[in-house]
Every structure is written in C-alpha cells, then in structure tokens.
Length: 225
Image 1 (cartoon, rainbow, N blue to C red):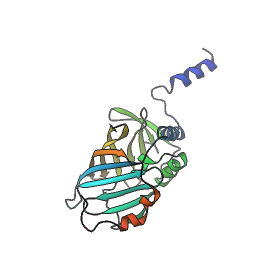
Image 2: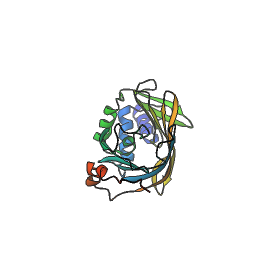
Image 3: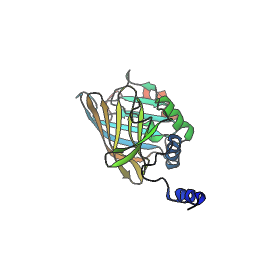
Image 4: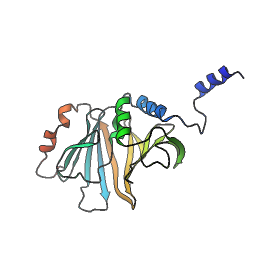
C-alpha cells in the first residue's frame, strides 16, 4: 500500500482505537459539536453535606453572556467568563458548578476558558472513564484536567488545580438537547454536592439585559417557587 493511499484511508476511517488527537484538534471538535448550541434553562434538585442549602435550583446558560443561577431561597448569582459579576451573597456558594465549560461554543471562547482553567493544551492523554474512552486535556496527571468522551465529545469531568472536581454524568437527550442528568461536585474528601437534573429546555428568549447585575438586585425578598 502506498503512503498516499494509507493517508487517504486514515482520513476516511478516522482515528484508530487508541489514537490520541492533539488537544487543539479536540477543542476544534468540541467547537464543531456546539455550532448550534442554544441557550438553556436547567432545573435541578440539590443535595449535599449542608442541610441549610436550597433544594431547587435553576441554571440559565448562554453561549455568549455567561450563566445565572437562582434558588428556592431567593439566592441569585451571575457568572461570566469565570467571574462572579453579581450575587446575593459573598462568596458564592460552593455548590455552584462550573457550567460555562458546557455552554461556550466559539473557538476563541473555548480557548479562553481553557486558559482561565489553567489546562495545559500541550498535553492530552487517552484513558478509560467508566465505560467510555476519554481524552484528558491537561494530561491524566496534570493539576487541571478536562475529560472529554472521544466519541460523543461530551465533557465528562473537570478537575481544577485546587482539587475540586465537577463530574458531568448520565448524559441525556432532553427533547433533542444533550445535557448531563447528574452533576457531582467533589473535593479531596469526596462528593459534597449532587445536582439531579429534572428538566432542560431551550431558552432562546434570553437577551443581554437578562445577564446584568440588575437581575440579581431584583431578587425577590421571599423564596422563589
């Protein structure tokens, strides 16, 4: 077989099992998958190590404007590019997961997120993650890692340099919208918060004004129902 034919077959058949894509290629694949990413409203039930935490939580994610959080105790927070823009409490509660990694879609925004998360894109490993094979951007022994399913390109896990891990589990198609069914937050002692997702739907009417500090300041005095 000629070298040219071998290259053609490799291009047609895709990566062989065990082949590790360069990290930049993985990020580009992530960008392609999210080309039609729409804003989302996600409703979840929270449980964890602190009984005083709220029970019902709503996340609203926008690929460009960031994400906002409201809970059944009247709490509201607005996060954009990893920064808490406004919130009803300081610091924000530890049960808020990093969700922008699931929603940003533009290539520049994805690269910016990986830089903020201090993920070394010069490193990428291919390892088993449960029943899946995952690319580990940042390296499987790196301080900050993002685990991505090599077939579906779903983000399965993010581990920060501080030892905090967010697991995105049980991906489900919610009326055509793919999103985890469970989100787990861990520290070095184990799982400290679990969010069980019970509704995901498109939120196409969200606009820039909905992600302003004024939204936080208008938080109701009584718990939301």
